[in-house]
Amino acid sequence: MRRHRIEQGDSVVRLAEQYGFAPDTIWNHPDNAELKALRKDMNVLAPGDMLAVPDLRLREEACATGRRHVFRRRGVPTVFRAQLYDRGEARRNEPYELEVDGRLYTGQTDDEGKIEVYLPNGARRGRLVVNRGEVDAEVRFGHMDPITEIAGVQKRLANLGFEVGAIDGVMHARLSAALRAFQTLVGLAPTAELDDETRAALADCHDLPDKLEELAERAAKAIGGG
Image (cartoon, rainbow, N blue to C red):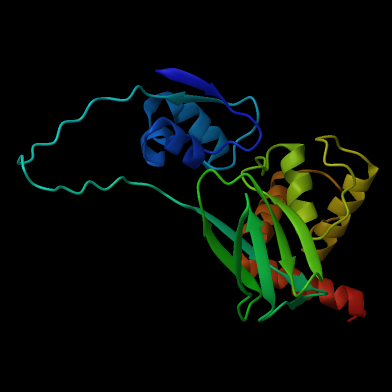
């Protein structure tokens, strides 16, 4: 058994490929029960977390000699998903280019402004360009921090379009202002407090398409004065 200290950008899916396991084999190991209870999501870990990685065991397969045999390796690809809005309106059917580690993926957003691309598990960073440069953004894979961490809150708010200032894991004035704006939009008291209700609403809006669409509609009304 080895202990892997999580660094920024690590995920169980990526590490499972590195160590030769299926992701669930590592994540569901009894020695990771405490970490699993703390983090919930195997791909949203915090730098400094300790992940238990079991030793590989030799497996034997009986097969006839003099014949050709095919063995399939189980693996889970990385999926990049994004949903794009402009002032509350989904960016529908717009061409995009996603360059990841020197490889180019092209397509167009769907009717809800969504992008979904399967990537190698080793993907680290990329660049997303939508509609010939109207959107031009750097993308870092595996860099989302748990929502229990201030940095995780900052990154989710920034992804949703709120101005949070420096993403530094510190509660400062610009982050407080962003929190109040978010709380107001979702119908919570604008206290700028990171309570459980605020974290849950932020997680839903960031990760669930229906909640994101609802948030975008509210933002559009706020901008339009409706």
